Amino acid sequence: MNAEYPRTYRIEPPTRRFIVGVALLLPAIGLGGTLLQLTGAIHRSLRGAGLIANNAGLLVISIMLWWGASRRVTLFEDAIEVSDWLSTRKLRRDQIRSRRIARGGRYRLVWYQVLVPADPRVRPLKLPPFLETDQALSSWIKSIPLDRPDRST
Image (cartoon, rainbow, N blue to C red; front, side, top):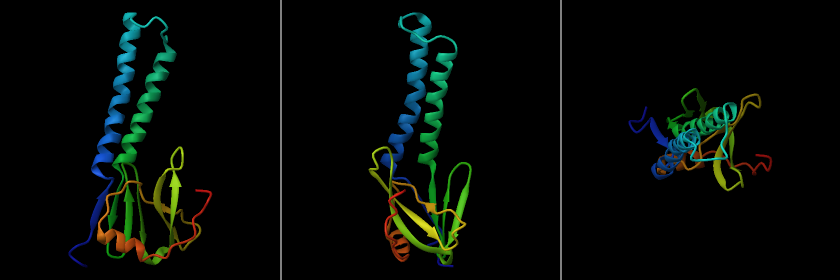
């Protein structure tokens, strides 16, 4: 195996810091709002279950943001792997039929690469958006044939 592999890539540091910052800020806003409501500083306040649901919702959104920012890609000479807190998926180069560029996000402004497996029973492997890349990753991905974009993604 070549000494330059495996290579690990994460979301670009400024983007990752921003996302983690927002993930930390949301529960702080929820806690601050809760304290203001409990002290009576906010007169139109939630009570009981509404207050708990509000803070739980902010916490869930925070966890999802942090989870997304923690995803990483590991490039091997003959495979690629995407992992996060709970899972790891790996495809060997010979298992990949093609790649496509997909759009996502609320206004479909986020672009990311999707690796399409040769076996139709296997789910496509989505690389995280805002991925910090270098020449090795770019060359590896560009060596996979490009499919026409799938408008449903």
